Length: 308
Image (cartoon, rainbow, N blue to C red; front, side, top):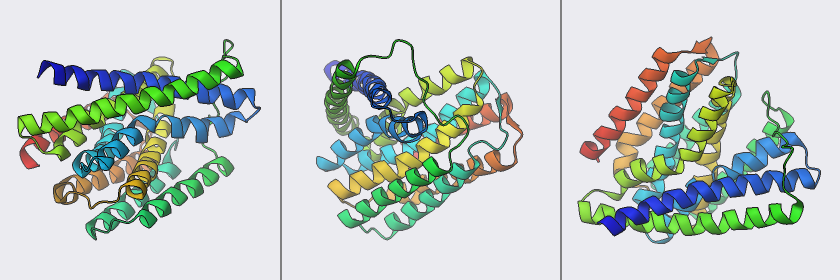
């Protein structure tokens, strides 16, 4: 058991480190090649920060563990909307000013669309390709209609192009290795503990792969830029839904476990509605709302072990 837990922890650490290397390398490559800050921030960073979730879900799908793959999709978005946003609001109350409203609408539409697809139990590579194509449309729309502060920030000590390429490739390698360690450990843990793979994907894997986003949003809050957390959260939700779901279904199509369909997808839809209402109508997200979001996440996580 100790070896198993060590494997899971090593996988989580590798995903975190690999994600950091990948983002740093991708941003540096973009800047060295003269790609605009806007495209870097919206497209490259957005996709790169979703790589830990995608690697974990695709690896799980490839070894025939749809519970972990789809549990990670749902759990990562719940972690973004409830855990990360709630924690950020407690650290530094968020002044809204309409930030994230458009992405929240897209996130809700994507959630309902994927829920409808999975209820039908359709599983086809073409559906995955359609979801990935939808992501391309979303990226083009974001580039042409950017949110505030969508550009990446150039650093004074940014690495040279060869070093940036090494960072990027190293990040990819570490992500792949970490994803395999995490997923194989999670599958074995579920078997030994008698817990469904859906629960492991929804909790251990989803929370672990969301740690980079949590660190980034907390850092933004501590720098006095807590309002950017909302845009990051809702944008990341769209990437997770379209990129991870699309890649998982395109590479290893399989039906979504019924327990996720009947319980967690409705909860995800409700959380998407809540985020949209906050983005549209709230003037700020204070510590009280942040505490409620965190409490909702804690309750759902605890009850997952009973429900699923």
